[in-house]
Length: 265
Image (cartoon, rainbow, N blue to C red; front, side, top):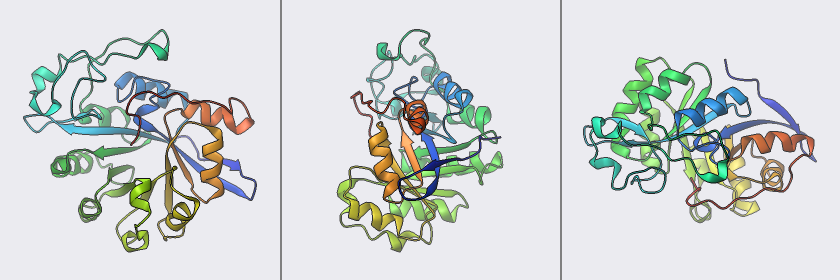
């Protein structure tokens, strides 16, 4: 079962926080890797594990953020061009900044992640390829995980379809999008907003007041940014460093930031 939600004392009132390990917590573990997700789960520093999904040439949903293999693996080229047999030959290459103890490993399929963690902890997966939704919905329903797996997208039209498919819907928005968004129009089919912490105070409050019960701020790596999001009413923190965020609850490690390529949602 997932760890219990932790209560954090803001300067105003106690706020239940949901911590989401972004790509498994990609400043602490190899992103979107089975080893990284397993470590994040075992450490218990997040209540939700986040990962990204792409489609292979044969329609198999796999776990990868980028459209290409270049940044995180020992291979290059589009993910979409690979067969499942070729996918199994790819290796995720842990960044040196993560320190010793991590090893190259095969990137997982979505089925492998759902089978490993489904029902043990809440999950959120981003459908980077919108056409993957039928396959993802089928996999989630077959495993009876519709109450514990969010499907994330930046497209309101796809979010509406996710809800129609009987799944939990997560809609992420950038700071630029949030300036003109009217989030209340989506509350009928969105279960969680995933909002950019770089947005203005007014735009963050607009989403908090939208009527959607879960508003999570992304992608946070400092205690200061976390505390601002919580003061403005967000009740979830999507972070590349869940271990730091939890230590920060007791005032430890309040200054922390690493800039590693392409760590936005």
